[in-house]
Length: 628
Image 1: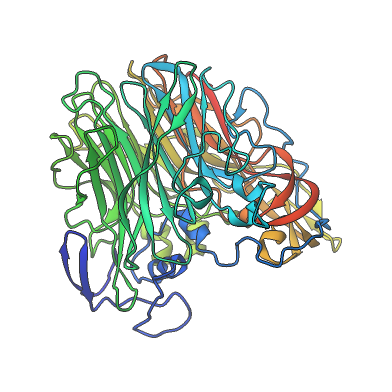
Image 2 (image 1 turned 30 degrees about the vertical axis):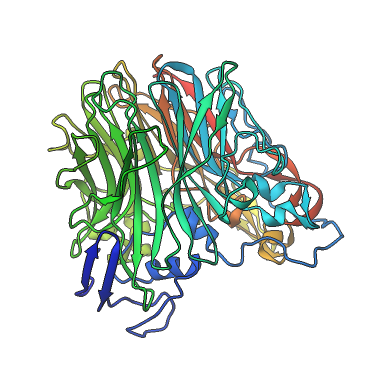
């Protein structure tokens, strides 16, 4: 939280009384006292984004769901299938995901999936679960009382499992009566009470149970919650999910739960073996005017396998302006929580850590790992980004944490430079002088001190993008040539440590730039225009992404994407999730997972609108396994 003027607040548990918070309006309105309708998700998002001096945001999922234009069809429903005039595509993109990478989601109708989490059973390295934001219900062909299921659906909590090391995956949800392994009991078409859900996190316990944590929320009403479901594998290896346990559900407009994470003490012999831990961001707003007040990290634990949880506690002391927490559990039972945040008058955000040696009952004072300059979208992209940390712990107790930060192109060591901060120097200065770098740091003394951060992808970080597909002829006859050289942006890192001590890191790298033809006239409403383009526009430069895994101890790397990822597909190119993920089994095999767009499928139902069967690119969750 930078340079925000004085505020008066009293925090009693989660009750907040606030006054005097001066913020800037989210619109050009220069009023010193804006108000926000925080009964809606859109109002909460606007309040946070309109807060002067605060540069964290809600999760990309909540921002996407807050978009009042990107919604499903409403009655009367058309009986005529839509035939698109043009469908945006590029000959440089794949039509399928090539081996050895494997598509995790098994739906056949071009649904969107993004923001994956992955976990490997510590007792069975061939058993893997992947979770994701899953929009499969937006493509279901069923109807309920005459209303298309795809109009009623939304972003849900999807999961798939593998018993053969990630070679094949199960199972496909096809309608409300056949959910496959979609998380039950949260969203309406899964038997729950909320409009939408997602923001996935996964962890196994020592007995082979898997736990899912996610969000449930309404778009235009206050209710929201953190939810945890426990999964069990039967003797045939089939996964089934139990009903959710809701953590701190609220109907108060002044509270928003966001960006949860789950951790389980799966270490045999730990004094807290199989204890379940959950952290999340608790955004708090002034109930009178809707202005953002603070967003501390909250924490709970369960001693009965997720059936019940402790009362929430705030674990951040005076670091009250936070987002993006991650939980790590050591072999001795010590719990570590990392997040991005700041104190009230800090010049930059930092990556922070607290620890608990008594099973989450109490926590240490926060330790700042390093400052972080919040990244902006990689050059020539438009999707939402963040600098949230990822972390893990090695068997010897060494802690590893990674995050993304804007760094000077000319820098020889890591640092926070105002030139790279869009809120100080402007986005043009950042793009001209800086690039996003996924970095990592380690600690061998329980987080008391940390090494100087260094890039995860050292060679790529020092490289320029490769131009592919140029020149192209514009619709008007002019030529678009390859752009000037520009450094590779890397972001959304992940960390995984194996029981033998191998440590893997991974991140997206914007290492390719190619032409992309835009849509000059998308059809309306917005959901239809995501597929149907009425008139093509000019070509623009478009950064495409590879996903790369590195061995932290040797520096060797492996690119696991068979073809670079084009982020322009689905959601207007503005939403591909908030993170990627990485896990490693007891056999030292890593499993990387990311959002990919190189598969084509045929779409018929889309957000309640019927199309003639139309081939489109989609967002898929893709995984690759290997060793380094």
